[in-house]
Length: 140
Image (cartoon, rainbow, N blue to C red; front, side, top):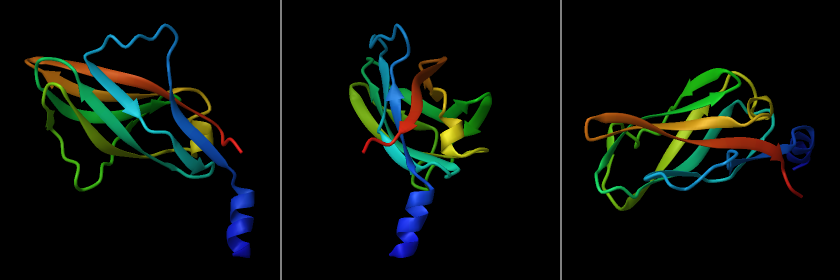
């Protein structure tokens, strides 16, 4: 127990949450929502639950998820149960597990807002839905 207290005391936590970009609107037909996570600042993995809502009249095919932070693009390392391409029918929402191995710890990676990008295909057109995520000290 003492080791856990010392380890926690030496490595405080950070909250990583979705933040609205300036001038953001909800007019997109494909909405992405990122569940808030709490990580120790020294961790070099970022994992979150992402919900994709397809409010269009056509199905979408998810092809890839990536994270762009501090000039680096990270490829998603999804759980074995997540496979791409993956279809989201019109009018439905789908939860995805995403996971990224970072070059730096989460504190540095999310010091400034990062972009989570979801690549998808609708009809014969490739598109990207993106959201901003940023870190802040864990609220006590």
